[in-house]
Length: 195
Image (cartoon, rainbow, N blue to C red; front, side, top):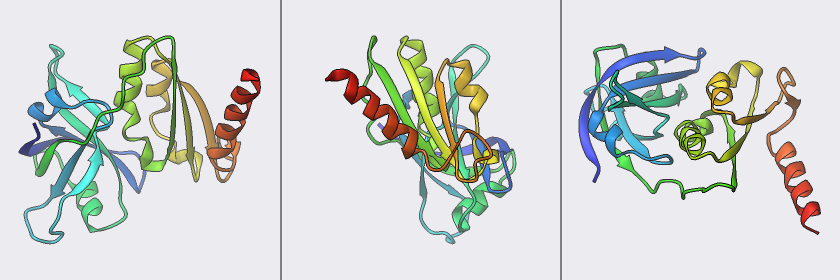
């Protein structure tokens, strides 16, 4: 059952001049959240912007004893709501409703999982990668961005033994182009093996 909390900002980690990860103290949401779910978030106490915005649960945060203590969200500053989130500071509060949505369907060994992301589309895959790793499922992340400095959390995924297939539009990291090109090649290879 979703809960509505006024969550304290624990940390605001800028990843670039556009992207940040906002850590929120929301133990009730963290305890119920599963990979693939999201929260509705609103910063500031005014009516502008009026509505909450959806954000995938990026990480489920845990305290020193391993108990769920909060969630984090990955955000890109592109409008009034995300600008407010980008500018929040520890100690401030944001309205947070969740967890919402259907979680990812379980993938059991010896199956493998492929995750495909670009930009903030990476957000639902951090918790999924942790879950897959814990169950021994082989995982690959096809991850693209405009530039290499917009490919975030690579070490996080490497630590979980996730195979990284990286692309950038400017060619600064990985293959030049969009992430669908290596994905299509991998799919074609799989189809040819089945024949």
